[in-house]
Picture 1 (tube, rainbow, N blue to C red):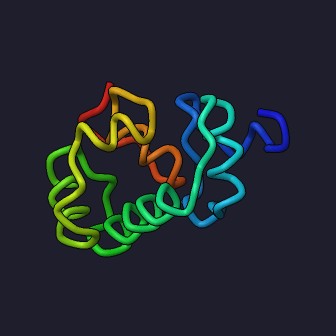
Picture 2 (spheres, rainbow, N blue to C red; picture 1 turned 90 degrees about the vertical axis):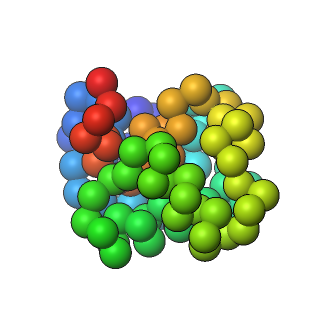
Length: 107
């Protein structure tokens, strides 16, 4: 990955150590996907990281959406996140951009 040490990542593109994450890494990962992150994106990613800090696992889609609604408001939905992050794999994409491991139930 340009600008990033490839040894920082596993074979699926997730950081090996979630503590290495910062917003600049998120921006570089997102740019690789053709996505320009704004402050709302970073707020969502920060909240995903908060989930991980509290519960010590990267969430699947359903618990992730419930948590984001509780923390950020009921305007959050899976469909909205799919649109905002240009993905059909919300939990996996958000975990990757937030510097977290791949959720256990993701292929």
